[in-house]
Image (cartoon, rainbow over all chains, first blue to last red; front, side, top):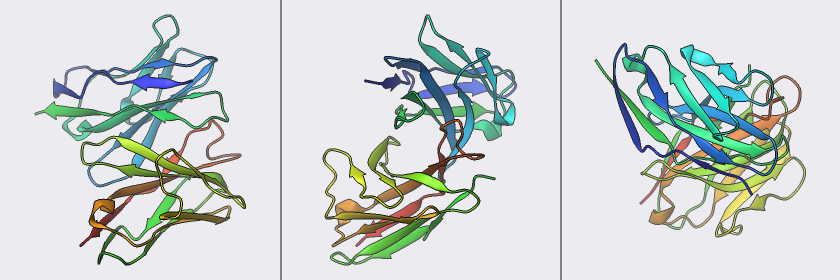
Length: 113
Length: 119
């Protein structure tokens, strides 16, 4: 079975400060991990993924995520937040390439000017 | 690349009528398409998974006779909400996953969503 948890319902950060959106997962085998962003009344946009290779994955809009196998985490990070980063962020995990990903409940990121 | 369109973006209908939502992958072949429902408190609920040319697989608790899904080609899937009721009002989102190019890492590409309001 696979599962994913986003422990924070909302994250608040000041513009220019670093941001972290947390995600932990549980799978039996090797995880495929994803981050998506959703702006109001829009579908989800793919940000980045981890399948194999370097633990630090770089994605769109300056975001990156670090795969930590021992902590079963895949936190999303950005060194300097922008007000335009305010959106809903979803983490997803699948147990290998052919499985249907499971999505977290989402974390609202609010970046204050 | 990897664009998924959804039509209509917004629909208002009367209770008891049926509504069809189209999901198209514009620049890749989608071997698998997914239909989600998003509730006001933001969580995504997977409704069904469809593979081209075969019957959709519905998640537990989703009425297959009410939410008809057809994946007739590698670029088109449709969701028909039959005999709609006000409680069916929601934001419906489709996504597609393909082979080669788009989706080779198993990521899904999402449509912009359809806001359904049933009066």
